[in-house]
Length: 345
Length: 124
Image 1 (cartoon, each protein chain N blue to C red):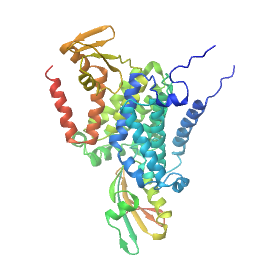
Image 2 (image 1 turned 90 degrees about the vertical axis):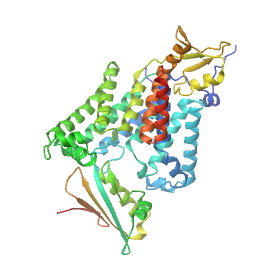
Image 3 (image 1 turned 135 degrees about the vertical axis):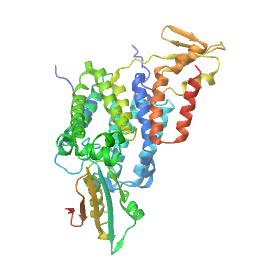
Image 4 (image 1 turned 90 degrees about the horizontal axis):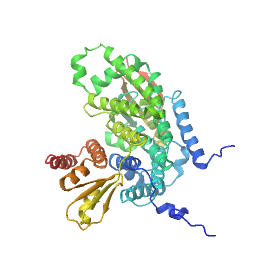
């Protein structure tokens, strides 16, 4: 009696085979890795010879620097493999998350809440088995932790924090022009509202039936902060929380089949796909055709379908935010020129 | 029937437990690491370091602590203090440096942390 081995059977195979992660989880994974690559490139540089430096645990001081160099190298290769669509995504995600945590533990200077949260999400993607509970617990811990820290700080209840924050740190003109100096009423309301929102988000995120409400409330909360501070504060958390909401969203992103005789064009059209769910089907036809589900479109309509697919929309959303955070004009120009092409349709 | 706890399950329980411990511990510590406290307080600070009567310049201070001599701390100011304190008790202990970190947190009165006394002095 023969027992047929399925692909992926055995440890060696599992290392190199891609996993069947749903497209929205793959988008989140890649968005998180983009964040590490573009927003924290310093962790790769400092790991080469600058670690350990003032670690959280004394014992890490005795670890030689080349261990961190090696770890950073593995992290970089893991990220590249994911973008080259090679390897087991969950294993690479787990590995990346653990390495980032190790690097953070090796230096107090590298600690940041956003990077730690990214590392936690990457670790959890490694343990994803179809249920979103682990992501919900993680998001809940973040919000409840943040709320509990504010609850015990009087400056959040008497308006001192927000008044200083708006008036002296971020020079929010709207606040400064409408709220008289020494009047802490608005700042007090904002402080209390923040604590209540974080408490609410920490609870509702645990209830799968309220996922939509959680996502809307969360995006309004982080987006509102972004708006009030003219895009200077909370961009990082807006980005990271967007990826975490995507993880719990259960969004059904359908596979887009591109049919065109030219492999180069198909490859170009697949390039912005962070979800690995745009596939090329060979055809002898010269015109472009796109098939989603049971429907097929041709020509300009097909191109429109690709450009307004979830795959492209999420790519634009995350890349625009990354470009905003990196603040490189060249990226802005490239992205704006892409939108210029879109205007033609 | 008893449910078997897998290695992955055990890892996840520990993973989340450490975070809960971090949040709880954060209530009893001045520095706020691993307790999910982003932007809980904002401080503007300035570091001054004197070693053998020599005032270190901003580059020397950046090289020493990998922190800017002047700047903004978006987490607890005690995170910065803990970095400087750890440096002065380990890598830089032989320098016998005198350090002052002056800071204003949430618009309150200016305070100065001094080393090696490890004290916070409110400014009058």
